[in-house]
Every structure is written in C-alpha cells, then in structure tokens.
Length: 143
Image 1 (cartoon, helix red, strand yellow):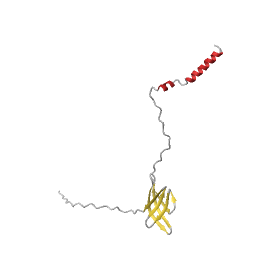
Image 2: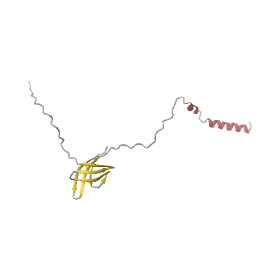
Image 3: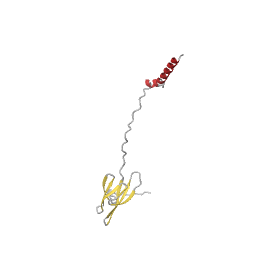
C-alpha cells in the first residue's frame, strides 16, 4: 500500500469514527420505549409566602403630664408573646404608636403598612343567661 492509500484509509476511518461516536444513538432515535422528553419546569420567582399578622393587644394606657404611655402585648405566630412599654411616637419591633387617647383608652398603632385602632379591653366575667331551674325532685331512699 502506498502512502496515498494509507492516508485515504486513515481519513476514512476518522470520518467514520466521528460519525459513529455513540453506537447507541440509533436506539435513542427509534424510541422503542416511547419515552417523552422531561417536562419543562417553570423557573419563575416563587410566590410570596403568607405571614399571618401578629396579635397585638393593649394591656394598659397611662398619661403622666404630656407623656402618654401604652403597654402592649405582641404575640407573633410561633413565638412567645412580648410585652412592650412604648410612648406616643415611638417605634419598636415593627410597631409605631401613632396616637394615644388615654381617656377613651384607644390607641392608634401602625404595624407595617397597616394602621390599627386598638381599644383597651377590660377583662371580666362573661355574663351567662341562667338556665331555668328544674323542679326539685323528691328522692326516696328505701333500705
């Protein structure tokens, strides 16, 4: 074999080797198992997670001269309640005391973007309607 024929065989072998790099390509092309490509997943921004609003209760209101104070209890879901003592206009822990009416016991509180009007609730015994009394029964004891 001369040099030309050797060169031709080498080039033919390289072209054939490149063309048949993966002998299993024919199986994929035939798709004998009827496989479908994986579904395209949506890689968009996840939706905003719902966070319930904290439970804010007024436990006391006081006025000393021009200073007005509010005693709050803030209970975030899943956390222990926090007791706060704040003045009018003060900001702390995501809360701002907007205004205090100590005579009516009403406080304006800004929690995040929400403006809340909270009223001091006085705890007491709930009123229960008395049930009509049943007629007394006579009890007889026989021995």
